[in-house]
Amino acid sequence: MMKKYLFFLFTVLCTLSLFSCSDDDNKDGSNPDEPWKQISNDYSGDKLDLQLGGTALTGKTVTLEATSADRVKVTLEKVLPGTETVTVDATLTVTKAEVVATSYLFQGETKVDSRTLVVNGSIKSGVLSLSIAISIDSPIVGKWALAPNVLTDTNGDGVINEMDYNPMGGAFFLSLETADGNITFEGQSVPCPMFCLMADKKAEAFLEASLQEVSFEKDGRVVFTYMKDGQTLPLEGIANYYVKEQMLYMTLDIKTIIAMLMTKSDNNPFAGLEQVIALAENGIPLGLAFSEDGQNGTLLINTEMAQQLLPALAPVFQLLPTLMPDEPEKLAILEQIATLAKDVPTYKEFIVGMNLVKK
Image (cartoon, rainbow, N blue to C red; front, side):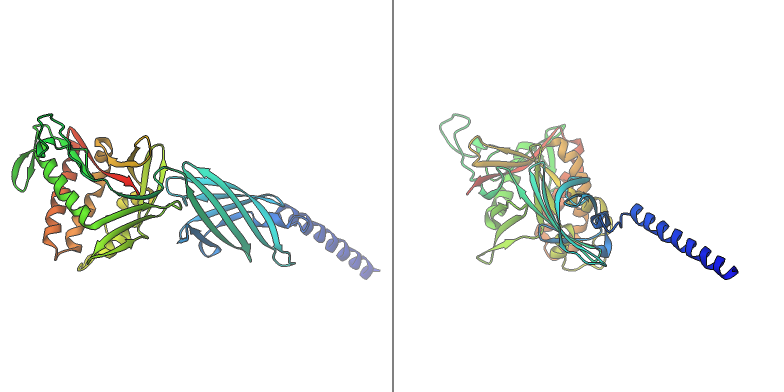
């Protein structure tokens, strides 16, 4: 009789345990009738294969929240430059239903400032693979050449010469004003207008001899075409852009740029550049303006922007001499630029930029 009681008690306990486990399964989202709930999770590290515009990203987190069997919310945390979080509502489909694990596909899109984001993802064996494509809607999209410097008789004396200099014309322009109207250049005090004229000439000569074209691609890439040894060559993979509130934000791969410049350096080239790298990853702000027909564009940094931006770039100017010790002419120019950057907070006015013409 005792054995029967023990058997009965054991059966009851097993039954209760079974119901308890079944109830717990429902609570944690593993209900076999709703397997889609299992994909709701934070994905990072080796559980996330993330690509933005074809470039692999690491150290990021993507959150999925399945709201039904055919809808999922995709939250991107610090993935898109210039944003903290972006949420995309996507359609969810089952690609392979299995007892152990089910595979899913999802697709969705959303608009962020000038960018349309299209996300395509898959989940298999607990790993999220996510590809993000970007499409930019802005007049800046296209190929641009340097604007020519065309002098006109601005002072009305019937003669076109350097006295008709337009500080805002040409491919490059610089306008600055100090408290006393002078600036120290190569050890001498020079009137600001004269210094701007000299800087304009040197910068435009350099740009015209090297930079042939700037292409702002619809997918957010920036491609520079430059001259080297009589050949035109593309330079890409170091810069991207986005447009927000009449500003163009240029994101730069500082580490790649420094590696390209580096020739001889025994020091860690990235030491002290954390602030600059963060700024470049989020986007360096540039003022953006167009002519009425959209065929002429201007990118610039004004006084307020320069006062915030240039001091942050001071570590870069200090680093460059160690990266290019065998190019004294370029170093002399960089030293002058570094001096300008350091003194910008004291200037009454400072504007620097480029004028472009659409091709």
